[in-house]
Image 1 (cartoon, rainbow, N blue to C red):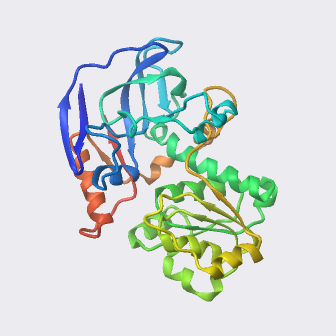
Image 2: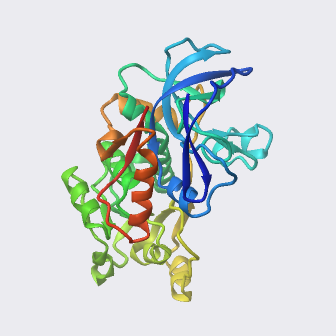
Image 3: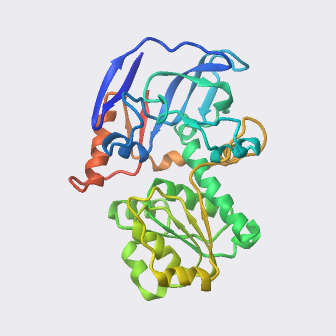
Length: 347
């Protein structure tokens, strides 16, 4: 089989490898579609890998090739990439997303930028055939946004209360577009989405998302004007901005990977106190192989018509993947403009 190894910072090597071995309580998955996450850019070019060589890729679906468990050959499955310890306090409460000693396919161990992968059966969720392969691969990032939605619902007290609240999302990338669609699906007012990238703004508008330039955030009319704000850009300055534009009694969710140290002014801290703002962090999603979870809710939303793959702009092969990762890096470092929202590997 083929696999793409990150052999050192900024350097990839496509290799031929023996088929993986089947282990106890696991299945060998023939991978089909894998989302390219923005975290893989830092992992590839920002010395973000835990070790080398590393096979990245954690937004993945495929078909069961061989199973040591209850799965059948040919079953369509999606992979929950986080491997909990099952021993810590969070795991005992089944809050696996906050496990204190976890592993992770694609970062702390090899992931899905290869043709076959051995996966613990616990981490596999069977999907109906009606879910497209591209949408199936994006269950993971979509579930992360369902988790944000559920945090907002909890902060607001109920979905009914949330439906009366006007919100904003700072950062207009792929995850924001999914979140905006999820929120409008449950009957909320269209949130205002802010970004600096004109291509993203226009692309979002083409998908009926209320997107505008971040310069609009600097106008006084935006101060103290939103019932809730999600920070999704990673810009260190955006965290203070989120405090400034939320109303008294407002709700903030901080979910992005911050790009540098955050400095919040004394006046902004005072605003948190005086406005009695609620702040919640979010980074992953709830998952259980059976029972209710963000993942089960995500699959149900996709079955009802939510299509996260509508935001994918580039489908690539394993051979083309290093080039597409480099283009994202060049854009991020402002060396070369790259008009893209989301890339996906097709095996």
